[in-house]
Length: 410
Ligand SMILES: *Cc1c(COP(=O)(O)O)cnc(C)c1O
Image 1 (tube, rainbow, N blue to C red):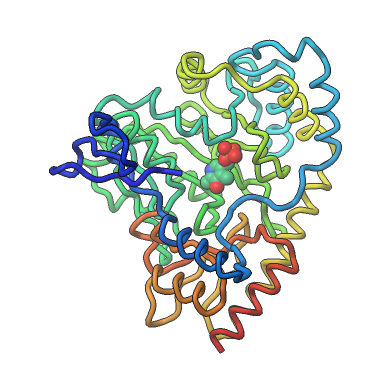
Image 2: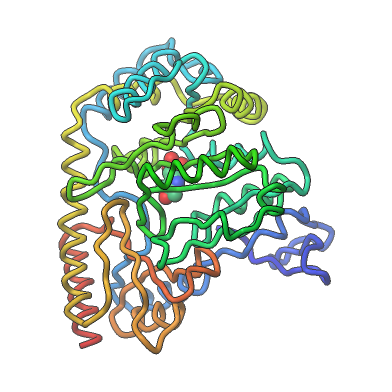
């Protein structure tokens, strides 16, 4: 949990953690610039309710509740018994893993990759995303970060001395960025563009035509694209999410991050991979050789079992989320609230009813229905006016939560 940080006089001068430890202990300016933990106040109120014996239903957590499929767990058990897997893994990932990832990618998106040069194993995609700006930003260099967005893009940029510039995502544009609106001088200055479709938190999706437009801008202004595709497999109603690398000419200037976390319910395992242009992958790899020592071989081999094994488990997970989505959507709609069922991701992003803002509505849901959601502002200022529900609760809990909301607000 992030410590609460007191800003220095000019707002950026280090800051002293409010923990009562030595006053000489001064955190770095960069760390001091990171926003405080956005859920501290909600956590405190949930804790207070639970102490009073109230059963709180939490729609705030984006972590699959379903277990990892047994054939993957089995493979880990076998591989973890082999002494040859007990040593340091290779930095870039086992050849076997990179080949399986390239093969999966080819089958899924029709794009061929050289497993030797264009694939890199990651300790979860968050690790790769957080280290990527270290490879491409110098002090003061600009990265464009979507708002609302996964906080890692912005915070990793700050941690390596870069300057995050907000790329607003608005409902009117389907939460797709309008690069043209940023102006040429900013685009010329920017080095990195973070994207994430299917999107957390808005659940928006982008089609190939949108990716083509973004690649066009990136080539014109010499931007590197970092595309987070963590939700490519969590889709509904026949929708299939594309890869950015399907766009001609995208690979040389892009890295795409993939994760086994959501696809195979493996968030705790910490395994993912980056794919993209050889120079980009090699630079990210160079950063990693200096900060970590790779993914446990037994976990990489279990990931191979996931990528090469039967994929029914993925369809079953999506079916469970779809069922939950429909339960929640119908409850919220019965209150006359405007709800758009997501085509992808684990989330339902909803505009708050008239008379509320993100925070007051979140507070009201907790007080009146004992239900927790995430206020949109936790993902940036442009998340104001929205809340995010996760679909990662067992059906009966989700149903009960939806019913409580219906009763409390009708
Ligand atoms: C869950 C999530 C990830 C995946 O993180 P891992 O480190 O692979 O577990 C990446 N990006 C977004 C937007 C996510 O929501």
